[in-house]
Amino acid sequence: MKFLDQAKVYVRSGDGGAGCVSFRREKFIEFGGPDGGDGGRGGDVAAECVEGLNTLIDYRYQQHFKAKTGMHGMGKNRAGGRGADAVLKVPVGTQIFEEDEETLIADLTEIGQRVVICKGGNGGFGNAHFTTSTNRAPRRANPGQQGEERTIVLRLKLIADAGLVGLPNAGKSTFLASVTAAKPKIADYPFTTLHPGLGVVRRDGREFVLADIPGLIEGAHEGHGLGDRFLGHIERCRVLLHLVDATGEHAGKDYKTVRKELAAYGAGLEEKLEIVALSKVDAADSDHLKKQRERLKRAMASAGPPAESAAAPLALSSATGAGVAEALRAVSAPIEGAKSEERAQEQPTEWRP
Image (cartoon, one colour):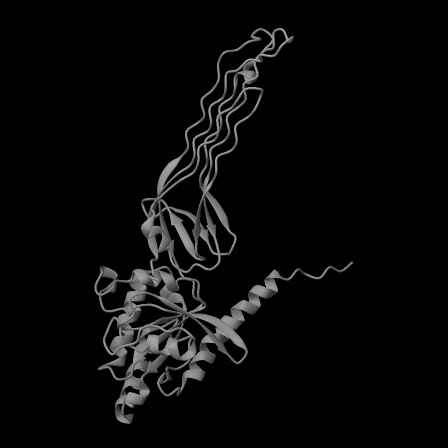
């Protein structure tokens, strides 16, 4: 299945049904009077967050959704039925924007959340509704109101506890594959990862979701490389694991390049807690590794918070497993702390007389 994290969709709610002009026609009943029923309400267009979806690929093949028109009123005071709703089923983490892609309509972050995007038109009144003491036989009925229409933009932001960032070919996909059951594409060339990936880490009785995004290069916020559009998938992460290639030319410059792109993107990414680690240490000799570690320490010191709030740079190798457990413990600690605080806030306070 292809990964699609943004789609533009046209939606239109149903028109209301028209009211009916009708009069009773029954034997032995004189002056039967009006009995036209009201029209039914048009169907709504709603978005619902459902389980089992992780992409917006369905909206690549269908971009128009229209709810049904309400049924017209009928004689014998029979009201028309309500039109069927059109429901857009979306994965967890979907945001709904206006066509300008800036005005947020809804942010669906939990299974079962539902929001009405376009309300259906009201049904028209039948002639029985207009009966008065002076007008006993009205011959008028209202048409149904028209439905609403609009173009919306669906944007998916993956919900993960931790996110992997770094330059292309820094070992992010290899790390994800080594600690989770995910099977991302891995190759020895830049931009192997073309779309974000998710995996569930289970270590030491703890569990958290780890997200891997395509690598960043200098000028990504200006559209260079794959751009920085995929950074939206780690906006909800509690902690970032920044991998720096130990076999590169200058670890400090690589670190600063990614930090610059995070700051240019905004959305609070540069303020998130960051765990920094040198990757691929098994492929670097001891002298080069020592230089890289010193360069990285100086770059972190000059960057300031949140680099200062994290521990010293770690060293790991996804191929041999060296340092992987330490990195996972460093990542899971703030996640568990945040979850514990949330559980404590959800628990009701004990009542005492």
